[in-house]
Image 1 (cartoon, helix red, strand yellow):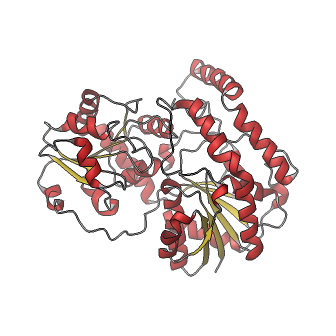
Image 2 (cartoon, rainbow, N blue to C red; image 1 turned 180 degrees about the vertical axis):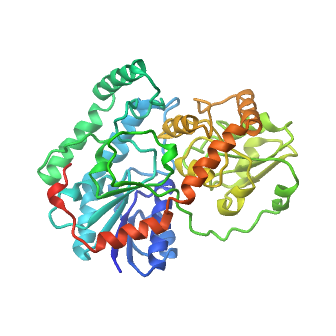
Image 3 (cartoon, helix red, strand yellow; image 1 turned 60 degrees about the vertical axis):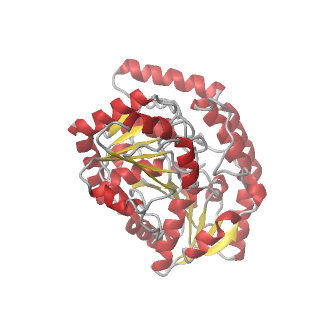
Length: 434
């Protein structure tokens, strides 16, 4: 069995897959430790892993509820977040990783994409193998892709490629130059070396990337290394939530439309949940809203009068709920989208903050849903999109294709396989370059 160290920023969307991996590895008999913020100690320990506290100065405050300026979206906001919420903390995070490994060596380190303190580890001569969990759309460049954050599909033809190349030069120079410069400075300070890749290609320097989605949700990139494996979304640990009193209503014959703003960008229910209720109140569907962990009472207060065809909950167990869903309306959290696709549920996506524009663009590009290209959709646009997703079979066919890809992707079995094979051999540091 292997000794495994997992690292994650203390934020729900990042830690969820990490805890799922930790719980499964513990079940299989591996020695497992998890380094993250103090707020998640209980969750780590319930998974059966040993908790290691990431110092408070090693991350940017309350990442679960980041403060944002109005209209804060797009590449400029992404560049700001990369610098101030992630790259800036690479030093103290790396120190915490080194301390954990000095206290107890590990065979394998598994990290989520934006725990920046794991990246300097790859140039160390004496290190565990490093596996990365791809919790967001794959950010690596190539294949004629547009700059990350714009939410533009690669498209076809020389004019689109020329457009994307020009946009990349412009945004690299004026938007991402500052966080890239900080990454170079900090990496040189910590390791004495200069990164050989951009921050967006940095995942490819890891020993393996375990992308938590199906290949059909990702843009083609010629030459993508075999170290990138699409393992599909991971199940969340069973929460043992009691079924809501309205659970039997899900089987009354009406299509079930689920609406969620996820667990991060849910500070203002008026962005998506309220207009969705107004849009769907007169449709012959059952609308189920979740508050992303916030109290259900707050959601109902935001709604005011709750229409007869609306049901609410704080959280729901997706493993039992999603098989009953006909369409999902979401602001584009990667975990929510991939969990829906694992059940063949087509989507309407309305999100532009964080990585959500990229998620939405990939959903539309794959054919599994509609990208509304806004995070403040009108009721009319939501109603039209839901009607199309429910009424046009092509969306469900595309979602079913991605469901079938996920079914054979391997999931936790694939993670365990890589952990076992990684612990059986030493990392080839001579070929690692960052």
